[in-house]
Image (cartoon, rainbow, N blue to C red; front, top):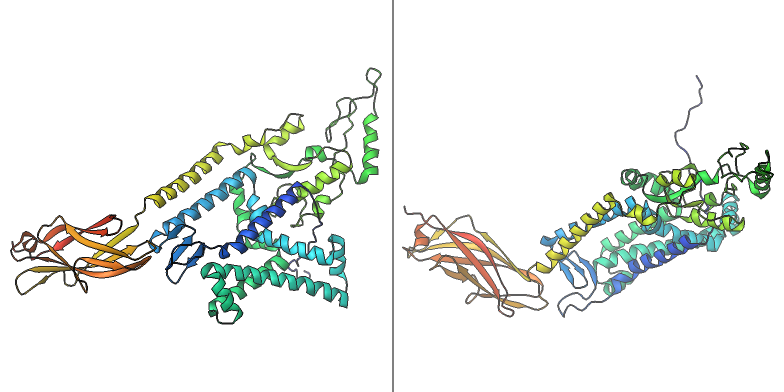
Length: 504
């Protein structure tokens, strides 16, 4: 038995993706610009809600337990709106994965977006793939220190901006910025910025593909969301194999297509790539010239020609690289493309691929779309029908009633009134279903109470039944408490009970 211990740890091999241009690369640039623009600019958008309310368009006000999104205001008891949005996000992710594979991972995942941004900075300072690889392998010199430190410094600035933009969603952005610069901001703001800065800097600059492979659970879940009909980035091996290393070898292999017996005085037909000719037995050369362009541009460092892999994020950069090579060697594009695995036998036999829309419009995808739409319509319906004023009533249970000196019976209730308007409102309280009950509000003259702007107020309400009345003598009487907005006339009610002495 060998004394040498076997290490189960494999050190990370740095990946240096080559620059590539093409339709999908341009699409990723536009998506990066859009997503980063939304993330960094949104906290600074203003929205006038009135003099007493915050004017930030998107604000998570933890202190007052509010969530503001332009004209929509979500209160704590309306958290089901947030839950519904999370459900829509999950179902939407299932829908896109079932239809187009891991498009979220390849185009809009924050890890992908920031890695692309960091790679852009790295490429601008250190050069393209070969230059960065040589710099990484070289010994430390003043030039290497300068290039590396410059790259890391810009990464750090981006990471600080990332953490800083996040905290602006939880407080008034201009005010918080001044407080941060003058060191007057709360400690939690600096801690949050520090944590997000460190994670962005490390994940985007150094861990990169390891976050997707080892830390993110989605690569392991996607298998349940995809099937042979899902459009995903794949290599048409039936067209590319057998590979030819370099143009000269490919040309030499192409010469074999003329070898064999003459049929009718003519050379035999050129066989399909990878398919032996029925007359000559000669296999046609594949379109893949084994240039490794698809591997060199992959940010995950994988070879898409090896088939579907957990590490593939379907960023489609290998499609751009392969199409560029195919154009140079005068071959049709699409050797690597968005394809469905179920189309491979059909295409290999010379048939036309099934249109992409037919892969998208499938029963499972329609089910996801229907569920997603149903949740969305339900949220819209709940948003439009929710009342502008709300009231909750909690009877005081200890004691359930009090007998006054004149024999009358009194019950107490804690009534919470909610004013969602951008100005103070006066509310009128009344009761119905139990004639003869008197209503009084503790600390108020009359039956009206003023609730400040966009807030709630808790008041103590007393209902009193005169001695000898049915309510005073009965064990329990149904009561309906009403609240009316004196300005708009809108009303709301809550049912409760009045407890009597039960003299029977």
